[in-house]
Length: 244
Ligand code: SAH
Image 1 (cartoon, rainbow, N blue to C red):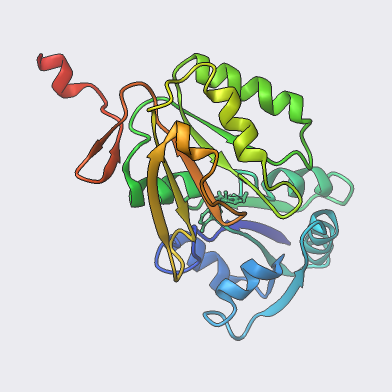
Image 2 (cartoon, helix red, strand yellow):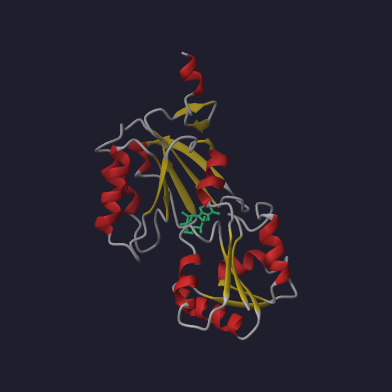
């Protein structure tokens, strides 16, 4: 029948949109990565759940599409926004192998927006979002994108800054950024956005390589104008500067 690919927002709680909540209410079956199903299962106790571990993304999407083709109302849940390093594209790709079904994508607050609001207003000018995970992208390409975005003075938002198997990726990324950005560039890290234990820290780009980050952290690197205003990370849009 229909697969709704639903963004839960960063925490799956108060930041979930009304549209996302309504879509979950309507569906019979919730499909997702175990950690994301856990975020919402208490709020939707009457739903059938299908959760699988990490790296089982293709199986999960096939199961969702097959259930929809069999006439069920299915929601594939993703943290943040399903179209930002989420399942939305994979559901479209996998669905090509089956008889036509309806697919809808329901947006959510991505970690960039959720984390920016915690830090202050770091993304108020042009920014680039780059994932440091090389599971699906060659590291050379990630390096080229980091260098290009840094050279163009974008604010950067880095997803997947580290994991157990790649503890030093943020350090490697910082070494590249430091070729184009000043060491005193203001940076921020936010862990567990919208979840219990949410924490945020500010530092300089020179310090960022040693910052404690993990797979639940999103990293922000300012542009040349970003500054610390009373402990908040702020990238001016330029209104006051225009007034001179
Ligand atoms: N679809 C998600 C991103 C999935 S990629 C979204 O739109 O937000 C996973 C990465 O997203 C994590 O490694 C982390 O960098 C970031 N992330 C997702 N949820 C987060 C949260 N609650 N707090 C901090 N970072 C988060």
